[in-house]
Image (cartoon, helix red, strand yellow):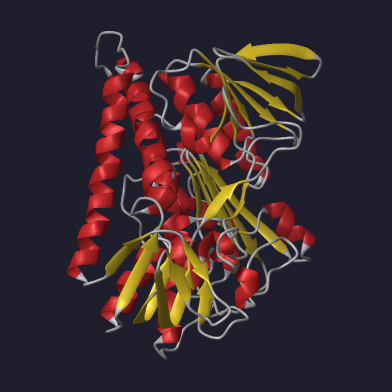
Length: 456
């Protein structure tokens, strides 16, 4: 067995792992990345990036179909699904190729294989044993099993749903969280007969209730049959279709997508041998600097508590590496991390919902305006979107922000930044915003919270 030494070894080349590796190299560390699959991990290859490539195609198709409202007359569009998926592959290869180029630029060694920790605090990959001052665990997540339903045949996960070779005729999605809502919204607009099932009482159940209501209406307008408070059972997958029972009704579709959550991918890491502690939920216990219970070993991203988001993993990778390098770091505040869902309509949020803020005992103030209150909402043809701010009245604190509508995923960042810089809704209300832009809806929501809404 060959023994090799590095300053930093990163296990996993997803958005957490590859960012950690690049930051380590920038700080002068001799760095290696171990990846058993493709560079870029799940996010770039089978999840975030391919999903948004397909969703972007659905967005364009919707815009073309609505062009008549803007005085643009076009023929009824058709979907070349093979070309759509070829572009998806091009997007993926461009971005993963970019990561490989960054590895070369930063002199990061990429090692292909399965990594396992040893009781000696080293990393075993095939016949090699690597030692390092800092080991970063960044292996991401795997699909959680669904009681009573087995993956296989026509029952697939979210990764397979973004890689269809043919546009499904009939599609059912179980789980109306972000992933399930995105899948349903994409394929319904592309032409699939789509049904969305959720065991809880609303779609996007972790979002603010006002936001969920608008999303439900938007999904229904796309022709999606939305079933809330509905479980499915008696699933039977055949060669060309899958059938199941929902609310006493027998349903048959071409594909059933299970989008009901994921768990940490830790099975092959050898955590027990390395003496690394897990929480009751099976996540790796870390402190605010991402340190595990084993000295010199850090864990980031979906392996740890907090939202399972690529940008959270990236920031945690930087924190872990900078801690290992002796720099001063600051723990992430999970509730302040922006969340984005790219269904139609877009949804973005951070912080507390109205219900959470009231349950926490805050003296809550709400600022809420529709996109239609500002000129850009009418210009863009989206008057039904809303910006909703959750504030605390005594000190003007911004406790949370929730946006649904065109470009919500871009608009949220202003409010995240204000929160990070210790500003509140009163400060947002006094910042000059460009006209006519959708950001003016953010401005008006802040003014509403502050008690002096202009356009409303």
